Image (cartoon, rainbow, N blue to C red; front, top):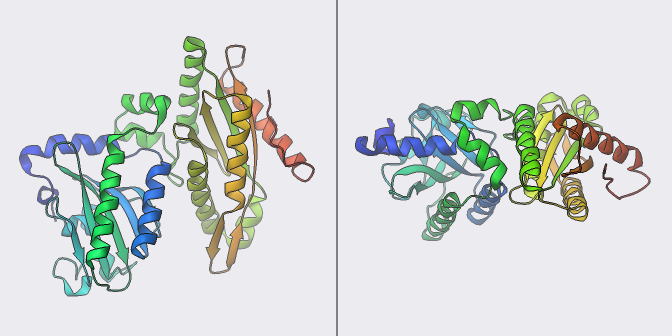
Length: 346
């Protein structure tokens, strides 16, 4: 299938520009939440929000399926979407559009799919809210109404910005390829380089406007034991799940990054010591309640979190600020069995 079936030739350039602004952007709690609700509400194996360009289908949020992007020939959304009309395939093996599709003939062998197109201000199709299952199922009026309502919510969220000024400023400076270089492939968070650029911006806002920023380091406890017992592939699954959990735990506008290995960096703008401690504690609590199911059993993890506040009185640069937060995190590890309080390196 060619993308011109989705977007007419005369409007392709405008739509493509809009899609390129949306792809290669970090995880956002609001979209993670929508796909979880969609999966539960429709009872499907997979739910996803994706954006469609000439070159790929890029997944902004997905639950139940480990995928980040697909080429056009492997995209079920591109195979069946024709315009801005909702579409459902009750049995992919009985539909000529999908019966020879690689996601139907090969893994994960989807037998059902349904899509609510997401359109931009001009009515161009730029993405879809999709539902997938590995068994055929009836596309009932209730299921299609649910998909339509949730697709409308996803579309409205796109018209809003929940990333905060620091991330919006950085994203506005970068095209998709440069954004890709600043995002971690595994977790879909900013990588270390992206995080340090954002921290530099935050330090500049401190100097310019006197705003404070909290800087936290999150480290997975005993992560080596997870890799040793379950293997590195399972370790990667844990890190991806942790990334989503951390993003869901912090506030809109806060920033999560992967420093590397099993360490994460959080940037919490415009916060005082009490508010910062509350965010850090919420991260710990959300991770503690996370259960990751595997064939070998359930995996539970905990994290140690430490942080510091940077303000006009701070004489330290970005590297020194991260070092202070890192020291506070190691203090948290040492105190883990003595106190539930999260330390701040003030």
